[in-house]
Image 1 (cartoon, helix red, strand yellow):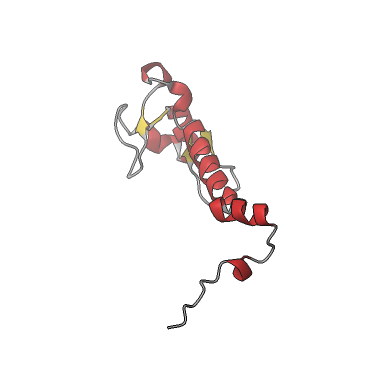
Image 2 (cartoon, rainbow, N blue to C red):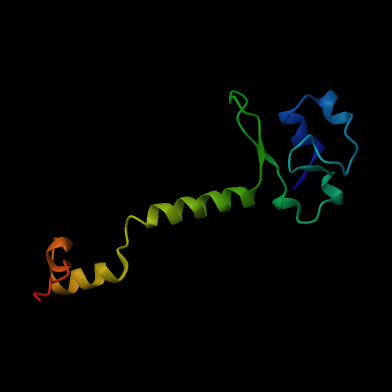
Length: 108
């Protein structure tokens, strides 16, 4: 993911960033140091940083926010839907699913 020298200097000392050649990976991260003029889809690059008082200094993008929001929505929506069982329960007005879904034992 591209990161501009300006955004990188907000998460690391400027002296360190100046020693990294443009187009090179920043440390062991996923970020590649590129000026905005050389970045395709610059609005998707890592341009936001964590607050200054945060214990971890990170840079993230709009795409990272979209992925996190989608993951949150997916997890949150799992509690709302019962799928086909919920539809059956609503049609039959059964409030306790254990009552109507116990398999009947066959007497042999």
